[in-house]
Every structure is written in structure tokens, then in C-alpha cells.
Image (cartoon, rainbow, N blue to C red; front, side, top):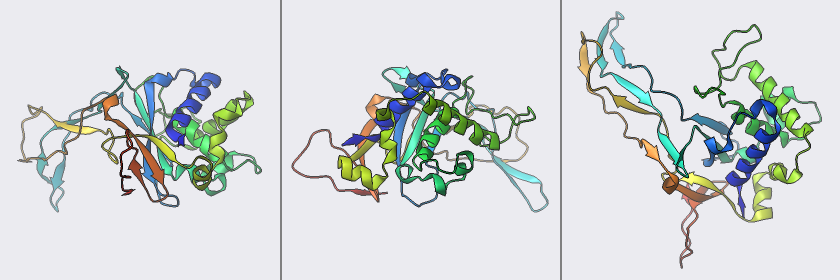
Length: 275
């Protein structure tokens, strides 16, 4: 069995210890977890989720008529990030990986190939993704890293062209330190090869799988501005506001789904769940 998220966590720990521009990152400030993602399907290979953003400014939804006049609006609300505690420490970021899609990523099938020499091994695409998510972590903990363009201006995109160039340079910087191959060798296997080699591919997930900690909306108790339009009561989605180690689980992943790994083996094998 291979615990894929644990191997990713250890790799990230090695990267931030070796790559000076990422050395500000405390490995204890983030957690790695797995989500299901089919190979070949659309979607991100991995995602950096920020938990340290302050509450948003108050806002509301509104509706206009055909003349463009605002006719009604929702209650005022703010968006907040949930609190996630691991070993009693509040985390600043979560980093999720889509399995098995991440495992089957190939350099020649991604736009990042333009930032690497022609004969670069295909598995480097996965190392690039790992560094990519670490690079999203903001040194000032104000959210996702704000990119700056070549002319010194803030980019309105978190994935500016400069971002991919910087990530490729950090990947090269890491490999130049001659890390122990055991830290990254698991990236060389696609999902089928992992199953043949280790039999089972597991990873940390949340017990609410496929759900995970996300932004939530909180209505304001008082209106900042007296309403002039009709107020439409809102049914805000109910989402958890706090998580801890007790909300974590271990799941086994397959090409077409996943299932919870039972803590105690019983007489019956749990049915595999569809994605």
C-alpha cells in the first residue's frame, strides 16, 4: 500500500527545505488531502485552498430589470474561510490532489511543456504541479500569492505567464540540490503502475468526502445601508465552519471511484463508491 498524500507531504517538506525562495513556508501550516478526479476528465490536477483570508467586505446579490434598474437585492453578507485544526494548530492552507488524474499527468499533454527542455522526462509534470501549488502560498499570508508582471504591475491573474516560468525555475533549483531519489521516485509511476507496485493507493480525505472545507457566507445581523429596493430573503448553503483531526479519514482510490478504508477490518468488504 502507498499513502499517496503522505508521500506528497514529505516531498513538499523536502522541497521547502531545499529551495530558498520557498523556505518561508512552514510545512506544519498546510495539509495535503486527496479528491477524486478521473484521468482524461477536465479539471485541475491539484488546488491550493487558502484558509487565512480575512472576512470579505459586506456585499449582496442584486437583480436588474430590462432597463438596467436594480429592482431587488439580497440581504447583506460576508464570506469567511473555515477554521481547520490539525494537532491543535490552525492551518493556513489546504492542498488537494485529484487522484488518479494527477498520477497520470504527462508533460507532453500540458502547456507547461514549453518551459522545459525537449527531452525532459514526462513525470516532471507532476513535480511541477507540486511546486506550482507551493508557489501559490503567499509569503504574507494574505491569500493566494499575487503575481507581478514583468513591468512591475500586479497581475489580475494568479496564473500569469510569469508564474509558469517561475515554477519551472524552482523545479530546476530543487533538482539541482540533488535530493534523495526516494523523495520523488513515486512520481514516476502512473496510476496503473502504482496499483501494480503497491496493490493499493490510499490518501487522506475528509469524512464528508467528496465535500471539504470551503468558503461560507454569513448574513449580517444589521444592514450597513438602509434598503431602497425589495429585500429577497436568502437561503445560504449550510457549511461547516470548523474542522479538526477528527474530521479526517483515509480513502482508497481507483480509476473510477474511491472508498473509505475501514479502521478495523470486519467480515465484510465495503462497497466501492462511485465518484
